[in-house]
Image (cartoon, rainbow, N blue to C red; front, top):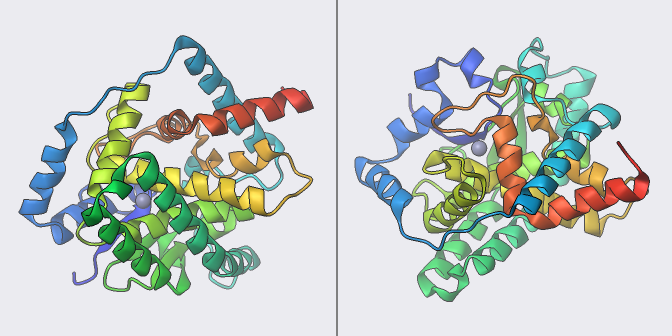
Amino acid sequence: MSISRKGTTQYRSYRTYIPRRLCVKCLLLVLLISANSLAQVKSGTHSSHPRASMSAEAKTLLDEAIGVVCTQAKLDPKSSIAIDEMQARPSLPLQSPEARAGAERAQRLLPVTKALMIASLQQLATEYGFQKSPKFRLRIKQAIARVNSVQRVRPDMDSRDNASVYLSRPHVITFGTIFLAGLRSDEGMISVLAHELMHIADGDNDSLRPLVSAIGNRASDLTGLEIHGQRSEEVTCDLIGAMAVRAYITSTPSYESIARRIARSIQHNCVELDEGDEDHLSPRGTIRALLALNPVLVRELINDREERKLP
Ligand SMILES: [Zn+2]
């Protein structure tokens, strides 16, 4: 196979529709990454770093915020469909009204998402201390150029509930029609587009690996979950997605509650069947890691609920 995928937004339909050993991550690892860079990935997982931790109070707030996200999944008419529910749906033709509307939404939001994603990446690089390094600043610059070169969303029936980037076609994000239809809000769509753009930013040499590893290590420390290697990349892509959505909410005020809009960026993870694998946290583990990494979102989800007396 000459085409290789950098990674999908980890909506785990590959378990159902792609044999497990041929999953996207495996393609990535087997076809793209040399043994050398694979070794770097592995060695990077045990680097020393100051350990972060969460207080009991912070853990309680985190659980409350997760409750808000998944309650909104049921209350919000524009909520994103849960991954496991999307998996169970039949394929959706390209010409179906829902798929066409989703494709139009994705293409329309691509330019603004590129700008929001780049700002989020720069913010993370600063927060994690990488802007001090001239070498890493150059890598960020190159990553931004890759993101800016993305031009198009390609709807694809066979991709079902996945979104993917193929390194042989770095200007295109391929988006399954079920997924296009299942993300029913601008916020849901931006989070996934930004996720894919982060894979493109990281590029075929995992050039942002030091930042990705630092984020994975921090998420591991905070949650006690094992978040290294490919899991770190997926969590970082999701974190960038949530940050991009938060910035979008600020720039587009609305009568909808902030909590409802934030929830749309992560609530596709509010699954009934909560399973992960070597390369992916479970969906609910993903929500936990994202909110642990971004306590501002936790506060906003909870404050908004209290103001509105939501359950
Ligand atoms: Zn991904």
